[in-house]
Length: 214
Ligand code: ADP
Ligand code: ADP
Ligand code: ZN
Figure 1: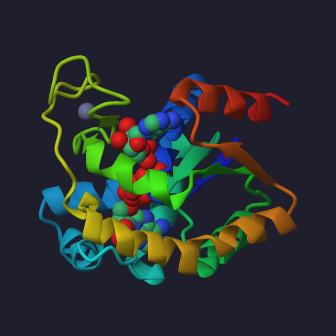
Figure 2: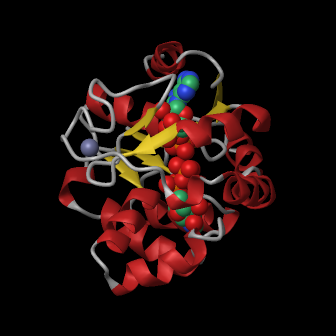
Figure 3: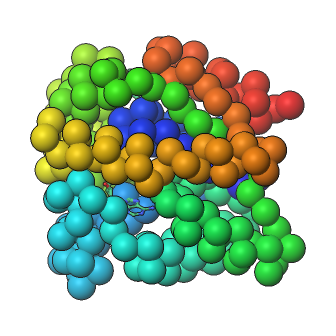
């Protein structure tokens, strides 16, 4: 099964993608996590990506597509994956479709986790991230068992550089301009499903399970 998670920054895509990946035993592929891992390791790719990420801008399509295709071409992605944060532009979606098409393959479903902008700003200030395994928490809504420590891997949690309110506002603008058109793109292909992302995270997950188990 090949699944795309759509939604604004902070809508809960990553949270749900991790649960889906666990349930179906498929990899969770997050371009944001790949970029952050590269920044942490000081690679050239990381240096390039950081220039854009710190301003809340998108990393150029060419670079992003190359990284993503490389990742989904790996052995563990053969039976499917859940894409979180990719595609974010129409050209990215088109390249993905073309590349899958060459293999006689296609995306099965695009799930839009719908959350209004007002709720997003609040969520982001409370978000804490694990840069080691990609898990995210929220100081009020999704606290880790031990304060400041990742439940999954025991590493310290951080407030992401780009989760400051000014940058979040930029990211929301970029989302509406460049990423939201993907909702119509996948709707036109007949594979769009929308879930109400303002619900409690387990309820969102149940709504997603209903969609995937149809
Ligand atoms: P969020 O989880 O808040 O939606 P991500 O971790 O997905 O954020 O992305 C963080 C940043 O990484 C983005 O603001 C952007 O700069 C960059 N990025 C991630 N995925 C992509 C992509 N598909 N295209 C371009 N830039 C991306
Ligand atoms: P995205 O990957 O779309 O940027 P995340 O999954 O990182 O979003 O979630 C953003 C923030 O909101 C995190 O702090 C996360 O713990 C929290 N969160 C996720 N789902 C919910 C929910 N259903 N209700 C409240 N907070 C949530
Ligand atoms: Zn972790």
